[in-house]
Amino acid sequence: ETGVTQSPTHLIKTRGQQVTLRCSSQSGHNTVSWYQQALGQGPQFIFQYYREEENGRGNFPPRFSGLQFPNYSSELNVNALELDDSALYLCASSPDTGGARAFFGQGTRLTVV
Amino acid sequence: RKEVEQDPGPFNVPEGATVAFNCTYSNSASQSFFWYRQDCRKEPKLLMSVYSSGNEDGRFTAQLNRASQYISLLIRDSKLSDSATYLCVVNIGRGDYKLSFGAGTTVTVRA
Picture 1 (cartoon, each protein chain N blue to C red):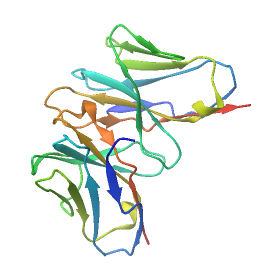
Picture 2: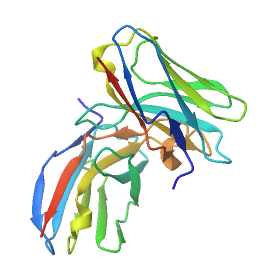
Picture 3: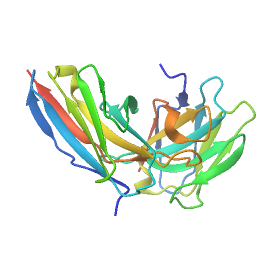
Picture 4: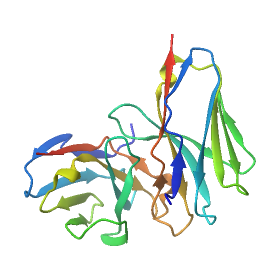
């Protein structure tokens, strides 16, 4: 096991609603990255948080936002949910900002209806 | 052009067979390369890093061709448990914060 835990594991929301996904990073890791994986696609980078600050962002609209807390756990918030937001959301923690040593959580499967 | 492109497969092979597939990457500044394995509806897990000189890990062999910007993975003596989607992953290097994933190559090993 990677020591990265995400909650909830599954979630169903209605279009237009808001959702918060949570991630507890591995002990000793100060960086958390979030990825979206649509069915049949590879994970796409959403953003990264390093020591409570956003450190980089992929090509996602502002309604995707995040937070990192002093204990390095993190949240991903998505407002105004759209059907296309249905995906597996993966959190990856790493000991530094480089992506190369990331460990993934089991993911949250979000379905928007 | 996508940052990382892979042949989606599927590759259907009998147990004991050898299967190989490639991926290409677009950014010549890419520094780190990996193969991840993803089982159905699970998170990706690191299979192996890919080094410039090529490297083996048991039945798995990875190769990197920087000139042509492609990476390969070869699986020898396939097992049923090798059935999975294999994701090619590229990281530009220190200071680059994201992993760029291909869409994956599906391998099914049949008895």
